[in-house]
Each structure stands twice: as C-alpha cells, then as structure tokens.
Length: 167
Image (cartoon, rainbow, N blue to C red; front, side, top):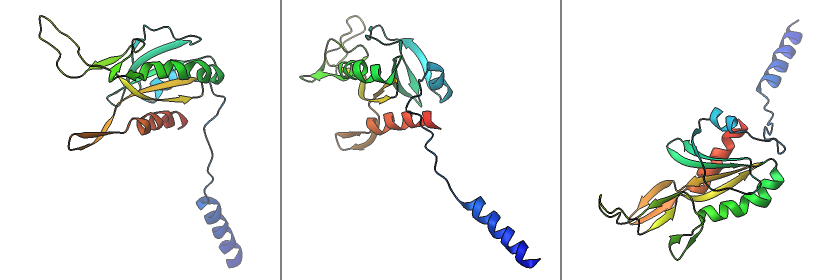
C-alpha cells in the first residue's frame, strides 16, 4: 500500500510540476481594434492619411505612450503595403520630418502665443512592428538619460506592446 501511495504521489508531483511551453501566437490571426482595447490601448482618433489597402488606422495611447495602428485585411497586405506606409510615418530627411508624416511633435522654439511656429517638426513615431495584419507605430520612449544623450527604447516598447496580444 505504501508503494502505491508513494508511486501516486510521485506521479502527481511529476505531472503537476512539469512545464509545457505553448506558443500562443497564431500567425494567421486577424487582429481587430477591440483586441488592442482589451490589452489597454486607448483609442483616440483616426489617421487623416489614407493608407492604401488598409481597413482602419487609428492612434491612441498605451501606458502613457502614443501608439498608432494600421489594420489590414491580411498579413500579406500588412507586409506589402504596411511597411512602406510605416516607413513614411517615421521618415526624417536632413533632420526634419517629410511631407508624408502625419503625426509629429515640435522640438525647439515654438514661437509665441500670437505667432506659434514649429521650426523643427519631428515624426511622433520612431519605430514600428508588423504583427500579423497590423502595423504598430510607436513613439520614442526615453529609457535612459545620459548627459545630453537620450537612449531611446522604442523598439522594445513596440515589441512588448505586440507581445501583449499573445497573452
């Protein structure tokens, strides 16, 4: 009887303590805006820019940082049309945003109340990640201030944001 009890106890321990890693990411999953709301993304307004072949494009906030989403009907379209669209939204030439950049921030002197100006407009987004059918645009996330240099950690913020969808 003791041997059976010992065997059953060991069996329960082995089964209970074993870990199986399941990849919960489905490469064929088609994400909707509601999937992002469920992980804490707060939708604000649609982009004015018409992104070819996209279903929807909105910007909003996640943990205090601006995140833009461009949704496509498929992963193939997100890669084919979304990557060039994202490149346009983060494009900087000669230290200034290009005409294709919709969301931008002003750096430097912003003028006066009567005559506001933006002498140094920079893209709001600095990095992007393609997750299945969605292009995720992320603003610069300052992680470390070192003297006058700022180490941006946007890529990992974008990747971490995308990983939240897998939970």
